[in-house]
Image (tube, rainbow, N blue to C red; front, side, top):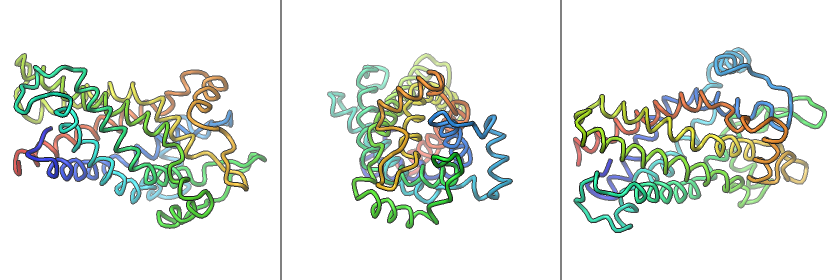
Amino acid sequence: MDSGNVFKGLFYGGFASCVAETVTMPIDVCKTRLQMDGAGGGVKMYNGTMDCAGKLVKSEGAGALFKGLPPALLRQSTYGSLRYGLYGPIRNSLGVKPGTPKHEIPLSKKILAGAGAGALSSAVANPTDLVKVRLQTDGQLKGPDGAYLPKKYTGMGHAFSSIVKEEGVLGLWKGVGPTCGRATALAAAELATYDEVKTQFLHKGLFTEGLLCTCATAFVSGFVSTVASSPFDVVKSRVMGQPLDAAGKPTLYDGMVDCFLKSSAKEGPMSLYNGFWPNFGRVVPRVTIVFIVMEQLKKNFG
């Protein structure tokens, strides 16, 4: 996962993340819709991932499965780049000497490095994440009378400008708390697990370096990171995607903690794992694609 220098690592991370984001976008759209489904105690629209995908295609066309792709790619070119590119440098800054065998690096330093890279990158990329969620949930939200609200945005540029106009520049950082919480948990689990599990697989001779090892490691890493990050992911989607009143203030949740408490109280604690399987179904192939692309880039270009 480490590259020859920081700049290569940043580019490899961003490029690999964009490839993976494009391939898994339909799953991400369904995941976000399922996470918002029933928010605030409303009636659920979908019975599962396939039902969600089918209803979206039927009502809005196949292009609906790629809603939010432009801001998602913009996000991955920054978030993905920083998250994967900074993991190695942050880990080494914690006292790990260059050239240290990976099986000798403490797991705690891998976790701290992943958490730091995730928190920093998500804070920087929050505006693109917010726009992606708004576009993905546009047309799904209901007003006080229970009727569906009309679509609000025509595209990425319009969403950016509308948010700034109605909510101010800082409105682009709405939901930054749960976003950073999710990214910290996700990156700490994903990067540290991938690094540690792959190291142990190779050290114990269970696998040799190659595609099979990458896929097996990515599966374990994807499951652990999905379990760790799903509650934050649900809260992030709900806080970012909730309707606003005429003054631009949120109508369902006051913030991350409020969303955690209300969702658990009204829908039960397991509501924090809404969309778990599409999330898992997205994370595993995404992680696999990212690391395959990064390993190939590192192998061919250093």
